Image 1 (cartoon, rainbow, N blue to C red):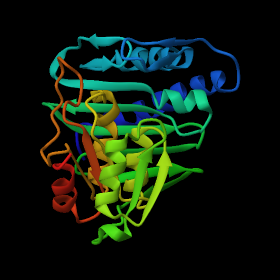
Image 2 (tube, rainbow, N blue to C red; image 1 turned 135 degrees about the vertical axis):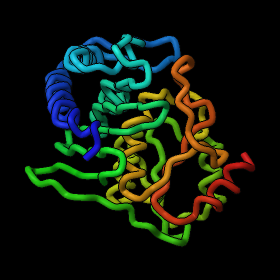
Image 3 (cartoon, helix red, strand yellow; image 1 turned 120 degrees about the vertical axis):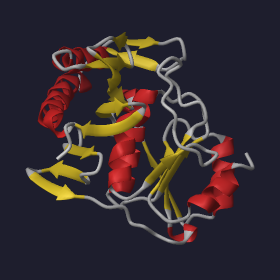
Length: 265
């Protein structure tokens, strides 16, 4: 077992608590602010993040949270990467497709991830080298990508709120057989990890490291791949805290074909 497994139960408990707290706001009025990048942030984001930071502060790694920023820890080679409410717009729109996400970054690489979708009562988790799992209705299930070999058989997940004309053009070039819309990058990656879809891509540089850390390790442990739009390994820049070259998540065997098409845009 990995040393990171020791953290797992604690993080699962924290994400569940944070999710329960977020749901208290879900069906009532709450304040909404606009951040500098024009994205929304709500009272639920802050309430969830308070729970996560409070719980994680007793551990050795530092913390980088979407709203609070950097909180130094005893270790400079390990950081908790916290997204208190991935898919805030979906939370506002009441689609149910939002998640609380906590990832552990070790020497620049995701080593553990927990993604909890409280409105769906689904929790996904993975520790590097130990497989990926879904917890739902009291049952734990090991999950695996579909591993398809033909793009025409793929199910592409498109963003509900950020699917640009360029993204649509890429979809046309890929020739995928089906397109479904979904919120929250974490929920998208986990759908691929479960084998319910096969591909998602973001060509934008607006994604934060907190959007990607936890779901990346879950997807990879389920047999999928995550990389940037040029097919390169993802880089977690702890200063800029943005995924400068987008992100692709894939559960099939067509990485090269996907990258060749993305490179044209």
